[in-house]
Every structure is written in structure tokens, then in C-alpha cells.
Length: 305
Length: 53
Image (cartoon, rainbow over all chains, first blue to last red; front, side, top):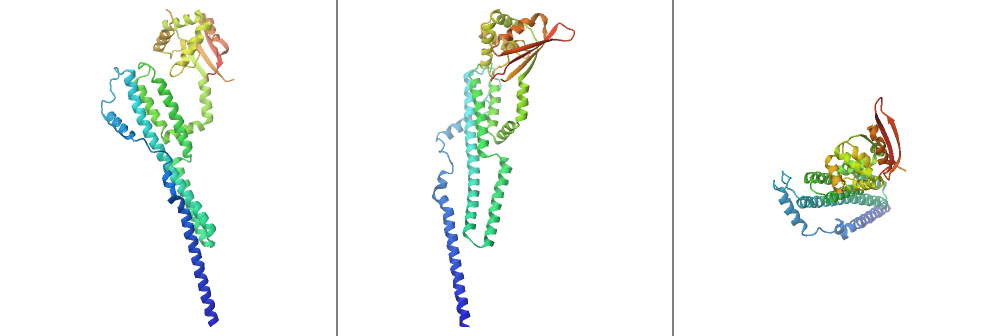
């Protein structure tokens, strides 16, 4: 009897010892897992420096300015190049501030989510290695699998499985291309690049900085065959021969010195916004070439009567 | 080398040679072909040029 009691007591003591040992393991594991979070992850979570202090004041002033109904005149006949550029510059600034905040939010929000879930998976995996009981391991594996599955599902639903970096890279490259175009166009006279056209380009600039815009552009890029077909289509230009006094005038000038004037007109066409890449001979007889453009060519190249 | 094609339809016979000469003066010019349109004095000119970058 005494032997049995002693054995039971010893077994009980052993069990208590094992439980304490297990508890200490779990506490150490808990401390190890949370140490990186307590020790400074929060300090770098934004991943970028703080915004300049005057930004909010400028944004507020501009929003107040453009919230007024007459901020952009309905009748744009009196708009000068300076006024057009001021309006577009200020709206580009607002679009940029909005985009950079949006970019920071999607990058930061998603990075935190992924880091948290990865940490949880890593932590649970580590716990599984330390805790030897197979039942506990099975439960932890199930939880770990559930978190991983949740992350895949969330990313699939919200980001269509495109990585944050790919989406941001696409938004940045499309925005850059559009901004370069606008900056170039803003050097033109208001008759060649109106405020209305600029506002239309601004809307496209804004769309380029959205998830939907990035996904559309990625889809377009991914459609290699469609892109190739588009390029082939662009390579074939069909024009019906057209004459008019303005066209005849330019053709006479071209014919007067073909080797000099054809390359000269070609270079002038390339400099236009958007750039004209068809042959000068085609451009002159193309019915889609407007009298306004023909007159511009005559004026800027000093083409005689 | 990447190329592009510019097809000009309904060119009057009287203007054809001058038009071809303008294409030949283009630094990107490669070659051309002409075909007479059915039962008319008009021609179709097809010009092959180097593709713009």
C-alpha cells in the first residue's frame, strides 16, 4: 500500500514537474515571439518619413479654392497659358498628395497584415516544434493552416493575387508616363493644349494611380498577343489621297528640295504633341490632317505661297 | 528590322511620281509598290518604311 502511494505521489510530482516545465517553455516562447513587436517594429511600421508640416495647410487651401463653383471657369476662352498651367499644377499637386497617402496606406496596411500572419505562422510552427504532445501539434497546425488560408483568401479577394510591389510599380510607371506627357503638353499654347484637354489628362493621371487602373494596365500588358496584334495594326496605315490648297502648298515646298525639306518636316512632326510618326508625304495628303495643323506647319517651317 | 506600311489609295496618275519621290526622300523609306485601281486613272501606292522607335 505504502509502495503504491509512494509511486502515485512520485508520479503526481513528476506530472507537476512536467506541467511546470511545459508552462515555462510556453512563457519563454511567448516572450520570444512578442519581443520584436515590443522592441521597435512599431517605430518603423510606416516605412517612410513623416510628411512635411506645411503640406496639410497647402492641401486645405487648394481644396477650399477648387471647391468653389467658379474655380474653373466654364467659359475657357480667356484662359492664358499661365492660368492653365497654374490650375493644372495645383490639381496635379493635390492628385500627387492623394496618391502618396493612398500608396502608403495600401503598402503599410497590407505589409502589416502579411507580417502579422507570417509571424503567427512562424510562431505557431515554432511552438509546434517545442511542444511535443502530438494532439497539441495537430491543433496548432490547424490554426496555422487557417491563418495562412485566410491570408491567401484576403489577398486573392482584394488584390487579385498581384503583389503590392507589382501594383505600386505599375501605378508609378503609368503615372510617370502620363505626367511627362502633361508637362510636355503644358509648354504648348493654350490653342494647342486647352485647359479642358489638360483636365481630361488629369483624370487619366488620377486613374493611373488607382488599384483598378493598375490592374487594368497589368492585364493589358499581360495580353501579349492582343498587344502584338495592336502593334501590327498600328504598323498598317491606310489613307485616301486628298488634295487642298494648303496641302498643295506644302507639297510644292517639299518638291522644291526633297532631300532637305522632307527630313525637315519629318523632324517637325516628331516634335509635335502627340508625336506624329507617319511619313511626311502621308501626313500631308491624309484627310485626317486638319487645316489647323497644316497652317501650323506652314507657319513654323516658313513654307512660302 | 521592324517595318511599317503606309497604303495610299486613289492617287491620281498625274501625282503618282511626285508622291513616290517624297517617300523616297524619307530617311525611313525602304521600298514601294503600285497597283492600278480597277478601270480608272487612279493608283494605290503601298510604301514600306522602317518602323518609328
